[in-house]
Image (cartoon, rainbow, N blue to C red; front, side, top):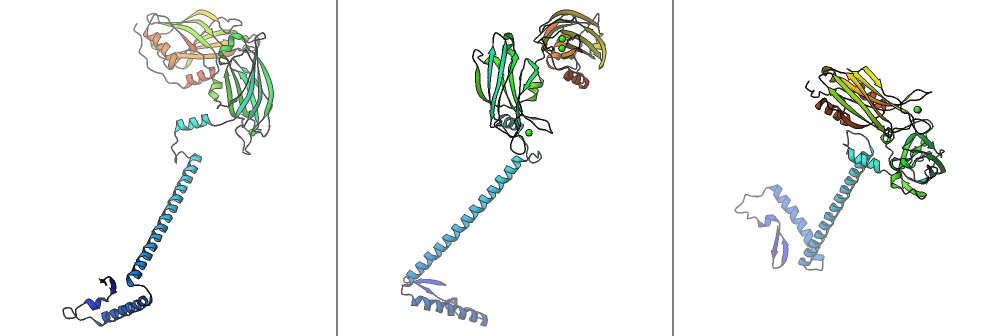
Length: 414
Ligand SMILES: [Ca+2]
Ligand SMILES: [Ca+2]
Ligand SMILES: [Ca+2]
C-alpha cells in the first residue's frame, strides 16, 4: 500500500496495517509472502536512498517516464492500426480493379448504359482527310491522308490499318486504301473520286471506316468518321483531322433504300381489298448508270403461305417513280385477320436477274408505322388511307414474316 505523509511517499507492507488482535492469525504461507514483499520493498528503498534526489522528485520522474512510455505504446498502436487499414483498403481497391477488368456477370452487375457509353467514348485514334467537290463535273474527291494514335487491335499492341471510303447515296461503290502493317500512325495519301449530283449533296454522307486487317480472322473495325455533306461548305477544299467514332454496323446495314407511298381501302360488304401504289422516292441506285428501273410487287400471304400476287409496270431510269396503279384482291372478313400484305420494290434488269430494292409488310402481325396504316384501314372501311413507308431490306422483312405471331385487331362492321 502507498501512503502519502508530509509530502513524502512511504511504502508499507500490508501486514503492517493489519491488527493482529481483531483478525485471525496469519498462516505460515502469508507470513512467508509478506516477508518476501518486505525484502523487495527494503531493497527498493535502499536503491532510492542511494539516489541524491528527494523522493518526490524521483517519483515524479518515474511517473513522467511511465507516462512517456505509455504515450509511445499508444502511438505505436495507432500507427500499426493505420498501416493495417491502408493495406486493407489497397487490397479492396485491387479487388475492385480486378473485378472491373473481369467480365464475369455474376460478380459485377454491369450498368448497361455506362458500359455502352464507355464503349462509345473509347479513344480510337484520329484521321486526317480532305474533301473537294467539283461542281462542273458533279464529282466529289475524298483523300485519306493519315491516321494517328489508332487503337491497337492486335495482341502485339499494334494494328494493320486500312480505310474503306464510300458515300451513303451509293453503298455499292466502296474504295479501300492499302493495308499498312503493324502501325498505329499510318500515312495513306490515297484519294478516291465519286460521282455525286448536286441534288444529292443534301442527303449524302461521306463515310471513312478504319479497319484492322487480320490474315486469318475477320477484320476489326477500329472506328469511323462520318461527314454529312449538308453541314459542310463545299465551296472550298476541306482538310481536317477528326477523332474516330465507334462504327455501328447497324448504321451501315440500314442504308437508305427509299420510300414508298400507297393507299389501302377495305370494303367488308364486297370483301375487296384495294391497294393503290402511288409513288416512290429516293430509291437506292441499282444500276451502274446511277439509276434503277423500279417496279412494285404486291403480294398477299394467307396463314403464312403465298396466296395472291400482282405487279406494276416498270418505270425506266428513275429513282423517284410515279405509278398510280390500283390492285384489287378478294379478301373476306375472316381472311383479313390472317393476311399479310407484302409490298416490295424491284429493279428490273434486262440481262441479269431483277434485284430487290426493299420491302415492307402490313397486316395484324406488322408493327409501328405499318401496323398503324393497317389498323387505320380496318377502322375506316370504304375509305382509302394513304401513307408513306420506309423500305426495309428484303431479307430482314422475310425473316420477320417467318417469325412473327399475329395481333388481334378489332374488325370492321359489314
Ligand atoms: Ca491485325
Ligand atoms: Ca440492276
Ligand atoms: Ca435495272
